[in-house]
Length: 235
Image (cartoon, rainbow, N blue to C red; front, side, top):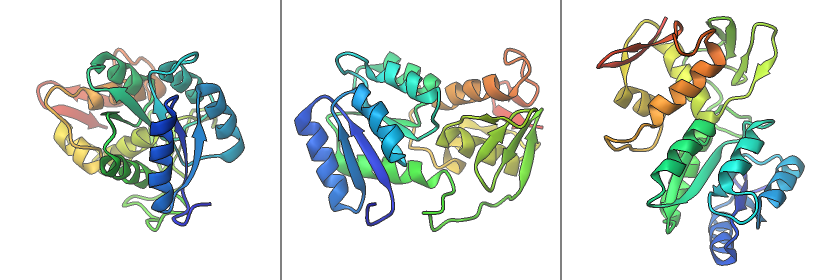
């Protein structure tokens, strides 16, 4: 285990970039595992139970988006996608599929480390110094139940619903602001998400994804409602 307690899988088919990222993170106390393709990434994810995956979109064979979709079938491990700067559509699709963040190539290693730290802070962990949240216990989101202590979401039959780090963070923010209308800036700030730009649809996409998990009819949401021209409200 790394000196700071976190294990990261770096999945990219470019050996130079993969090795550079892994070495940089290893020097900063992370335990890193390199995967040259999606097949290796899936194998290592099952074997090593990582705290985070760095996943390139453009890879031969199973590309990053397909790998992300397959990963989300049985894992909610945080994922940061690596993408070419011009691939706006791929970034949007990645967020819809459950990516926690994305970073454009060429990779700025200091920014990557900052994104990693921000992502890992979102979910309470035994490895984290922040072992409590502002609100404790459980919160009902319709028929679903959010356990704030364990960072788990359960359906009406008490089956766990997989969610990403950012999805948990958003639900936590809504639980702490019940009945209060929150705009996108407030949601991004309180959920500790990265800086955003006016055309960034990340919050809308993530809330749409959340609605598919907690709403009876996601097209007519009653739990997290849209307040036209302002933002969103829970309750």
